[in-house]
Length: 272
Length: 247
Image 1 (cartoon, rainbow over the protein chains, first blue to last red):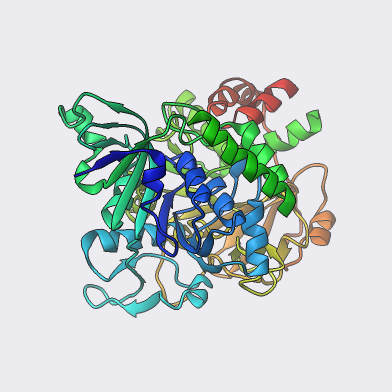
Image 2 (tube, chains in turn orange, yellow):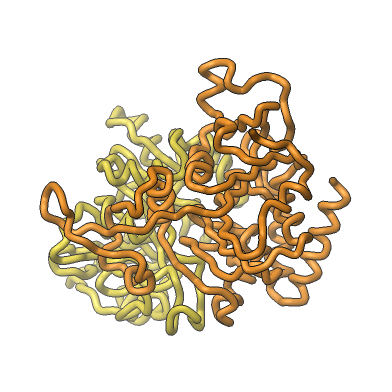
């Protein structure tokens, strides 16, 4: 059954060295849990961005918690480049597995279906095939004769995201963010933070159930109010653009990043 | 300031013209000018009774009808349901290949950009990919990219997608898929064909007489400065505000 625990207990389910899958900025990023995770001293994460990341990945990288990174991009969007990602790539701080968005979805889909790989259109001619020896170009074994790229299944040890609400049984409302369901199907364990726990049953009507990830796929839930801040959470709050810009400016230097991180961790303890 | 606004208005109107005839255009994140161009086409078609245009703007709630998560854009493109899209590049070469990864030797590149996003896939699948890069300099438009995020042409591999045009701050180029290169179509005022030659690091076809890129007419400008910038404000508030203030 899905457990509902405190935030510290939720992040204690992640151990150093595990692969951790996270969603794109604005689509339910568990920032409060990221702070708690960093506070716990997590190391050597194999981070998988689904399919890209921004502030969350940059914080984890800057804090030295990432051993390898699979992503299609890391960017702060309107606020510009992700400074710790950029510096980390140049210094070789982590193993880099450059990807392209639909290849990450395809890898998760393979895990969802319990098959070792997934064929995917396009990609041929890209240098990504040179730097991803685990991707292959094969002759289609069925149908018309054509080349097709296959990518291996991605089965993260842990998926972590933030959503507006869960009910007491552990069903989580994800709206139309179906990629969060895809994450949970593929992951061995799924941890979710929510703005609130509601007393009603989210599966009660067809309308409400359509936007819900059933508790079967959810291992642990913790409440974290404004848990995506400073990123946006749909229908709840917009991104705190000024805070993200402040991060972008401070994280340009190692010292500036340390100062930001320290404030970010303190802020979480104050709101908790 | 107003010349900056005029420069952007020419780009937006040119994008709307490049999209003429499409049914569905998708616009990636952080792309206010392409988004405005798509909205201008939609409004114009509506006003003159032409077939309606669907727009999917990533990151928007009001201008995005997808309900199946992040994968839907990519599935939709594979099904042939996306007619046009925009890609940029830290480097773009004369063969239409784009680099969104970085310069120098991979992986510890001397300059590193965010990454390839969906380009390696979408370039194969979307028929009318418009390359849009405002900075027009030899460091962007290079003879050969350092890393191919997405390749324009893949002989031996059938595809429906690829580059259609290249639009910059200075000029508009067509892409010839048979020849595998660009041809200068028009130059934005006040630039000259000589400026384009000086600032482009790859070779391209140049007609004997190079046209000037058309400035938007009065009706287009009225539409842009009213309805379009209002629509745009939901996704790109700062950009829309700047454009309206200048108007």
